[in-house]
Length: 336
Ligand SMILES: C[S@@+](CC[C@H](N)C(=O)[O-])C[C@H]1O[C@@H](n2cnc3c(N)ncnc32)[C@H](O)[C@@H]1O
Image (tube, rainbow, N blue to C red):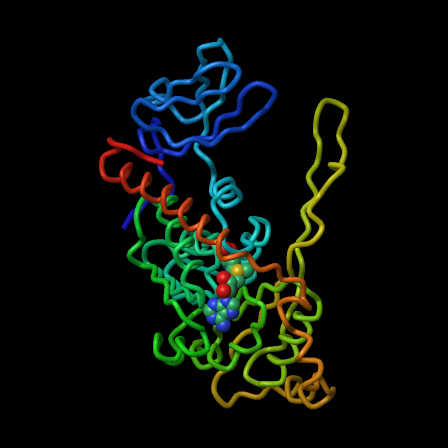
């Protein structure tokens, strides 16, 4: 396993480097022997960067300057190949806080999608923690595995991806009551709550990341109805960037207004029934079968990737992972 999830020190062959060139144009390259970045401004040889500190400026054959920085995790996840929609950095940060993901924690995640959240979780649990990721589509698991390999330079030995449905796989994969935290990022998290309740340790946290208010409502009522959890708490996270230049200090004109909602609840001890939970569970009717029919991928606006595009993403992700593996094992030879 690669202990250090973020390389440090001078640039080496195999490193991913984010270049900002003339007019702020950005390029992400993987440094390789003999490699060159060709633009209409000239040619930048990769060897000009190797051995230079992170944050250096390199000059191309046309005399144009490029600022070179290793991508941060948030840069990497935003530009890596995607099979499924990713958890955005603003939500990942909040998931780590609201889900109380701590060093050494045993965490279960489903689905793994493109592996963006897996990377944040792996960072937060550190080398003493354990992440078990579940994904029902094999190609997504492949994209995620390749993306994690690209970023870490190898497969972390405290991480595994189980291909299959969480409902079927979780009971056989973990001891009952042994998991500290569960993060569900999927269309129908309510289908998984029963197995999650069995897997979680008393006091453990389940966190659902969901895109629509209808899903939020359904999973909240399901969790409440089990009587096995504290009353769910829901939130959304909006970040408004600011333009800060001289006396022009104001909010940015554009922002990402909606990505998803977060919902958390804590597993009660076996047999514990707080009086307020009992009252809430009995109070209101929730969903009839007709309502449930509405939670189909189309109805909640989930856009499916085509098989052809998904295979392309798998190839892209695996090429990048091959480059990272070569870099981690010495850094010479061809890389993506
Ligand atoms: C939005 S993506 C997850 C994105 C991921 N969190 C990331 O940051 O890259 C949702 C994934 O959940 C998977 N999925 C949905 N239901 C599942 C289930 N019951 N068990 C396992 N995987 C599931 C889907 O195949 C899909 O890949």
